[in-house]
Image 1 (cartoon, one colour):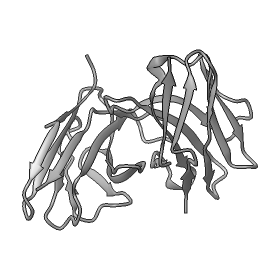
Image 2 (cartoon, chains in turn yellow, orange):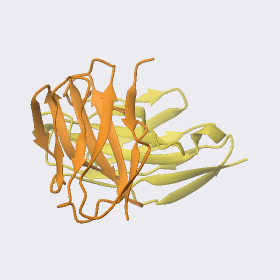
Image 3 (cartoon, one colour):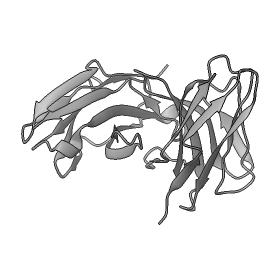
Image 4 (spheres, chains in turn red, blue):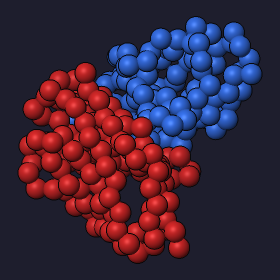
Length: 116
Length: 114
């Protein structure tokens, strides 16, 4: 079975500071993708960043970067220079290779609050 | 503008009634998905379709049905067999059905059973 666990239901950070959201997963597949999706108050999900399991280099998208630790099955998201617009629910998701394709397994989410 | 539309935004249903949620995309995507979101939980996959006239059950398909007669449309019917249908429903699409394909999401429909 594929599982994704986000152990932090809520996080808060001061504007302009850095915050890290945690995610652990479990899969027996050697090939898979990991994603972070953002759900702002509008509730429309938006892709933040993605990482292929075969790539050792951590993905980066502007202020967003990941720390992918394959052996530990850990996939944390770091947000640098936090902005008020970053306030949202963040979901970690796994696309396991045994499904052949894009059957995402989501974590429970972390609600991020940005304090001005 | 290309995107995914879901209607209605809010839907109320009496117990024992079937109801259909609409999902339309003009992104020319082959794959489409339906998810259910409950408070404090992540998204769970109900049904997905890789191509027109084909669809597969996801993790929580019981009490739901879908059709995919057109590439751009993937309606979801919540039947009376669904024991606890009150939830937020999200539709998504992706250009293909590969591991790395980004899923684009609609704005969602909140269904409340009275």
